[in-house]
Length: 108
Image 1 (cartoon, helix red, strand yellow):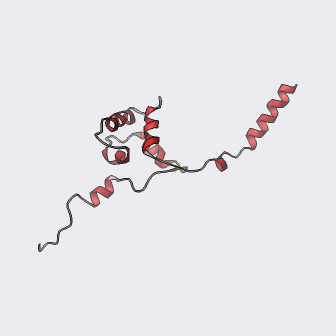
Image 2 (cartoon, one colour; image 1 turned 90 degrees about the vertical axis):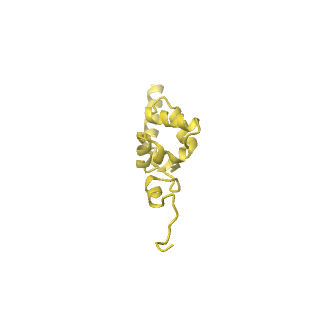
Image 3 (cartoon, one colour; image 1 turned 180 degrees about the horizontal axis):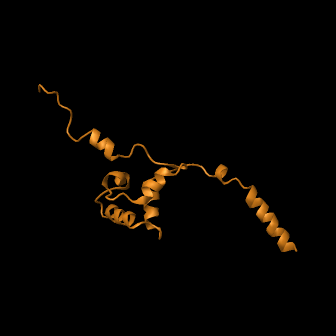
């Protein structure tokens, strides 16, 4: 009977626990993406991109620009309201808006 009452008390505590209040937001970093790529549940695209990062071909900060195709984990992280995706990382839109050539005045 003691085990049953302990189980009932544990169940009541679990039901009363507010999980959202304890969890804060988490910012995505290069380290987080690297750990995610080492996970046994990582997608093949993320693992392939991790290999490119390890070889020095690209960096985690450029995953949205350089990954082709974009790993599904990126979209999942960006869609999660408790995850903050860094706004200063380059994206394909910001790079196309500001090309590599400087602006030139037509009469120069």
